[in-house]
Length: 122
Image (cartoon, rainbow, N blue to C red):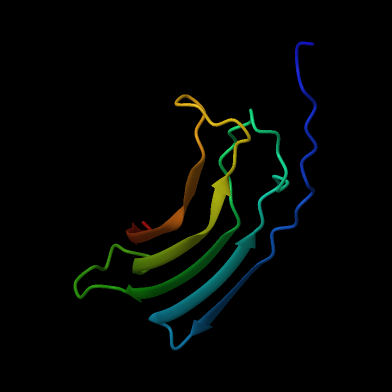
């Protein structure tokens, strides 16, 4: 036998985002995303696919302006700041016969990201 057939779960990944324009210069954004793992809970012990449920929260702000003396600009300069937090659900991979090469292990955790973008439209 050259392969083992595995059945993964179909998943839906709901996402929602909102933006509020306070005025012509300032915009604020929030977002949410939930991605369940397609991996079933009862994978065979020889499989080591690492994946877990993920929840992400995002926030962003934009500021647009035209500097004094910039008569050659047709559009404003835009500064964007974004933040993202990802939570990965803790999961344990159990093995019936663990070995040094294929042990029982846990994984999960969180990640954080910050971004800055400056856009100039000529």
